[in-house]
Amino acid sequence: MTASGSRPRPRASLARVVDDLGATLLELVHGDTSRSDDIGGVVIHDPVDAPVLPPRALVLGVGLEDPAAIAALLVELGRRDAAALVVRAPVPFTDEVRAAADTSRVALLGLSRGAPWAHLATMLRSVLAEGDLGGATPETLGGLPSGDLFAVANAISSLLDAPVTIEDRSSRVLAFSGRQDEADPSRVETILGRQVPERYSRILNERGVFRELHRSEQPIYMEAMPDVNEAITMARVAVAVRAGDEVLGSIWAAVPGPLSDERTAALRDAAQLVALHLLRVRAGADVERRVRADLVGSVLEGGSGARDALERLGLADTQLLVLGFTVADPGPVDRTDPSTAHERQRLGDAFAMHLSAVNPRSASALFDGVAYGLAAATGSREEAETRAMRIAHDFLGRIGGRLRPIVAIGPVATNLSDIVRARATTDRILRVLREGHGGRPVARLVDVQTESLLMELRDLTIARGEQLTGPLARLVAYDREHGGSLVETLQAWLDAFGDVTRASEALFVHPNTFRYRLRRVKEIGEVDLLDPAQRFALTLQLSLWPGRA
Image (cartoon, rainbow, N blue to C red):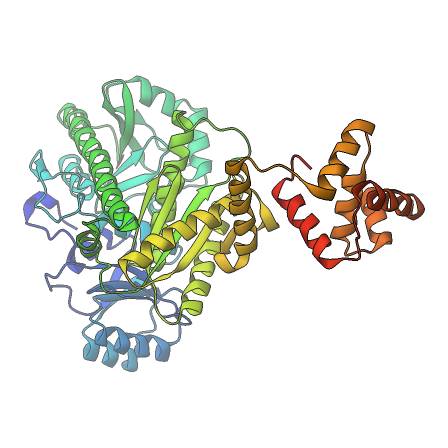
């Protein structure tokens, strides 16, 4: 891997991917990487449910080991104009696989043993990201493409003659240079995991390395620690990356010994350049998020610009699903609180990343605490909704349920007016899920339609100022005046379908006591509980006036 400044580099070609991630994460097993076409996206192969592929897709063959299966997939990907297939090393490169790769003209890459697929997917998207929507030629900072942290890492590596990583404040690897194979086992483990392992971070914390790093504006030197499982056998030089008083991250170089004064000065100056690139990445992400939000918003609202927005998102002329993701607040939440807004944005970004990983033809944006997703749908309506349910459950399984996240699956839409109605349906489903009906975290309209209609009827009764009338009104008045429990008795009896034993157990009273109260319900309410129409009316009233009843 050579320094970016030595030759022009394509921004999103297969050669760029192999150049940036080779040696540490990926190896080229067979194929030609010289084509200049941009890679259209990263897709995870699903043998059960074939994904939609963008042009020149880079496909991750998770779990593929059988040579025959790999060969068959290569042929299929060739027909769909894919750029490359990645499988876990060691790759079973048989004559059959070689012939399939040659026929399909799809490059075959191997993922290093121990490297997680999720980290590879994230790293690939970092390499392929172009910043703002629209594909304009990027600006340059210090002679390097603006925001291209891999190019920056390679340039710093050339200045220091050492392998380099650029990390954020949480020790997550944002980019790395070539020559990482020259470093020690701890560095290789850091690259593979895209995060400094917790046991090493704890040691650095205990030795005050991070404290000194964040306090000093000069590079700091850290001796090798061969006593730590012989993993940190090379010294480190690190410098904090700052924007004013804010520490954005740090640069780490694995070195054989202390740097010369000239290289120390070069590293210090490089930190200022990295700060500009990190700010540009942050600004670019914000701009992209705003542009994408505007486009998704135009589609969901169905205005005059909706058709153009669909085309810019690459979602025109296809049936779409509208999904909604949010967090069901456990209590009163200040939506203006920065930490609350940040958490919602983080989860919204995670939802967008997950959706794009499983369906490249998708777009997502956050509006008023709800992340709406537009996803291309294939197959029948039922198949598309079932597939979306699996995607939603998988996503919630990854992020956990501490904040009670919920996902609504809207109906399939085939035109712009359908999309507007699907968004309204998604909001209806989310409202039901927020109130916890059924205790489910994911739902379609068919799952919650009755609850949704009852909520809308309740809204109507409130808007009209409707008052309780008839038997239920008389029971409520009696309970208030005498401290009784006749309404509670009626509710338990209806819930138990008239089974006195079950109803009395629910209220923890003797069956005879319950029968006495039920007789009082009939007398005070002047109601015939054997009449189905009266039972239905009481059940409906109890649903529409739950608090007042």
